[in-house]
Image (cartoon, rainbow, N blue to C red; front, top):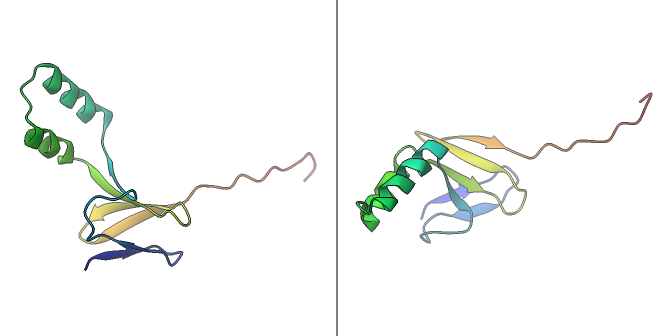
Length: 92
């Protein structure tokens, strides 16, 4: 059963099919290409999914800490977490 463990300790079960935490990062250019294909009505449902998957990056979103884990292939991920901007007053 495939799982992905975030550095915060939260474990995501990847064997349940589609989920709220599994995302696809798609370039705007690819979205435009798909939009054109849809408007010309030459894209079937299967072709839609194949086209959107081409060049898309899989991203896992940890719902516990908010980290984004971008799949770079070969089991390697790059993780990102929201920066916390602390307000610093004058002279500090």
